[in-house]
Length: 184
Image (tube, rainbow, N blue to C red; front, top):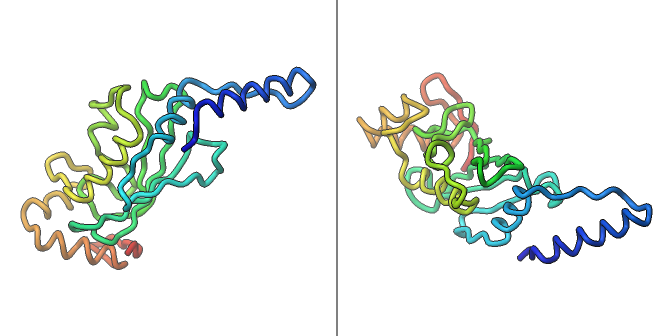
């Protein structure tokens, strides 16, 4: 676990070095401090992992991989990018799906339809809540609030065809005129 006290200690050391002619100190925003706390308290399911492609010094941008263990998307691997604003938690993180997926709540550009990332966001929510929300989209896709209207209609009207389309997309193939790279 990353301790907040270590962050403060590191800041004090940097401040002392700066007064001795060392490097300048970058003060952490309230959003960075809160994100640091959220990440240190993460309690993810075993099928979710978090990574920092730009290194742990850049906490505000990270990736989460979700590998559902049941449902339509079982055994697929889906990667999401998170961009967190300095005013977090007063503003929801920006989340995009990097993996092209046939899903009613994720469009082909990777935009995600999850209520807690939009109108239902509240500062008491955290990164753990968002990750569980994304995980839930794969175990229970929602055809009532879609971004991909075609996938939602198939899920609603013909769940067997929806399952076939998801499998075809996840194994690397076409659904209609759209090609999906393999993610399984």
